[in-house]
Image (cartoon, rainbow, N blue to C red; front, side, top):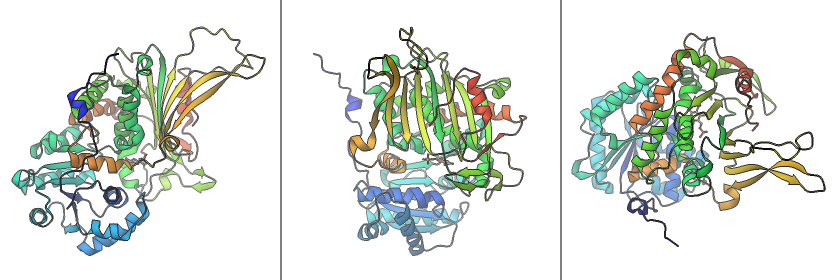
Length: 509
Ligand code: BG6
């Protein structure tokens, strides 16, 4: 028996490591993301002893808050949003490293004060010049902050420490603006310092997609056009726009979800095996998939995409308002809250296999999955008819909730007749491992501190993704408004008709 080849790059893979001491500066520290995700995530990392000694946080924002007041607001959020509860002594030791820097984003004096604080922390808490900037602001502030960091000499650390910057989505609103932003980023930071975050890549199930595909020998041989009929990727949300009407009206579901999260799910599903599990090898393969995808021509957009917008309806027995009645949504709003589309991956593995994507808000439930539907058996030797309801094999990767993987196949019903029914073979994270998965942000924050950018989006990946989305935006410009669907339903009827035209139907979740 031969031993599997040990690859030197692979052998260093993601052991439990503690990052070097560092300071994280959060721009937009008074906002929702900081309070719901970032600080609770950091607190959980602290609980698991994954943060380095001396780890410090500086909140940078416009509001006139003191260090104490900032810490106080965070306590309530950690109590509410931490997945592992709240312990006063642990919080106290974590909070010692938290401070606040009040400044508008365009005031050079604020950045000078920040530089001084950072130097002081290096001396007091041993953070050795290691800095992680996090842009948790609205996208309109990204360029200003980046320019000011550059002007204040904060692009590099004194004394050989590292400086990295995490940028939240949205990274641009079309190809041109994404390129402009990228140019601004690269005027100040080298690509190796830039971590564009897409929190879907931090989800356990999404990372497991690579392990499932590339740590097992039996799935890859059937993972192609010879065996796969089509792929359906669904990200269904029960929530509405949650008070973010202004942002959402600018974004719509295509920019909010498809350009980033759904495209990530698609590329991980479709990519070739990378040579190593390492940042550039993985991202090279993802970019190749995006480049192999065919952008829709303007006259194809109506044929291959469907837009919807929710109207008032009922969810879990309660009446809910329509998108146009939501707080913060401007009058005459026209953003889509639902998108369904077909995408084409034109390479040897996938030519002719449709990838159907759908996402929407105010659907009946939160359910995200990737379903690989296989071709039917080449010849049916069993009687088909009312007794035998023969369905194709489907492999489903359940991203959330109820994380797991299941395979549907046909089975004989016990008894004298040859009756056939579909059954499933299920793997459930909870049952298999009995531990709770970390939050996506925990994993990604730690990776950025460790300097591992595998699960972050590279500049060329963003560019390639916009090259597919921008023609759709153009095609929608003179199109009729989104089709209405009642909140609590599975989207507009046009989405069902769209798949029915191809002789297929959306999976019932
Ligand atoms: C965010 C979007 O990126 O992802 C939100 O801006 C959306 O509109 C959210 O609700 C969904 O994330 P998750 O992790 O709840 O599926």
